[in-house]
Picture 1: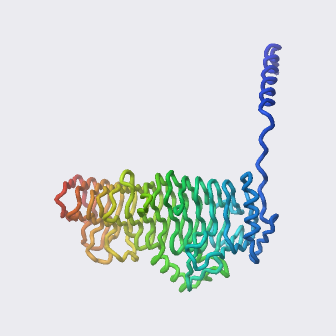
Picture 2: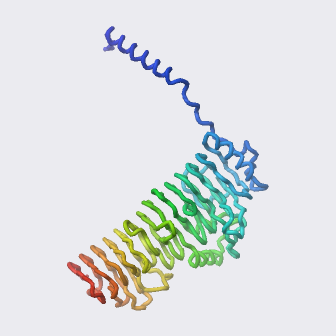
Picture 3: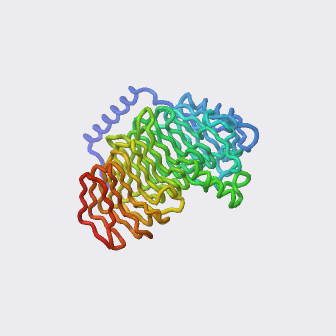
Length: 443
């Protein structure tokens, strides 16, 4: 049965509606809608891989700067022979709506970068400012050749507050993304695939919570580039690229950053996967989850981290070594992590070399096949600071080298509830500090 409001309720509704309309009128005319996206084609860009589209794209970006907005790059190959500066609050957007591989370069929105060849200190290919974004792009260096690697400046460099690199592939960079040369806060890298041969991502001068998620550094984004930029399946070129990366690449270089969050990020075939360094502005405080470094000489190198907070790894995997330098005083924590032997680990048979004065905490972390070369090095070589180990697992090993060495400079250690395969627990205790070894099992 239909129900109608009583006359009293009807008057109340009419009075409420009148008040609502009056309030709306008092607020005046609504703010103008943001301008529609600007297509670079309307500013003279050709997108056919010839000529030079730099000026046309920059004109579109400058036009969008007045009110903020999106500069749209339809599918095409855009020859950019200069550099691009994205103004505050402006997005340069291509057609890719998710992560895409270097093999798709030439499709979608592809930027061909030419500027700065031979000069690492030149202006970056793309500069970001506060609130500016690159999204949905592929960037290729057409003149970069594995036979004679040339330095180039940073592909993308940011400064200011909350700039973004999203759904972007950088196929064959020398240096990838710079979030560290200039002061910045809240940088956001998401769904970024890149191949770099010198530095992947650099972070410094970040005074509030940078974010990296789904950032992968891998040679396949160059190897599988289509002709004429790729390798055409030639093994000698693939081997040359991976040798170059193992000799020179630092994947994630992290200095001063406060509460950096890194998740689902990965680097392979790097000289150093994650390198925590100290710069004049300070050192790092980082939380890293579901991430890893694979098949390089050194997965993690800690020069120094913030003494009050340090670095925590959770659910991470390392197929190479982990080293802490004597200068470090900050805490390092690993939870639910794993180590594997790799043939490229040539400096030592140890999977962890721990120096400095800080505390290393290992929880539910496993170690597999260390010292496969038979050097006699311990799996975990604690040379200084304090070691707290609980619920860890030492899996099969091919040698009789020690599971753990506690060197003379170790201040204290607790090894609790840990399993040692092979029927014995090999702990070499050379320290006079307080050491507690309790509740462990042999298998």
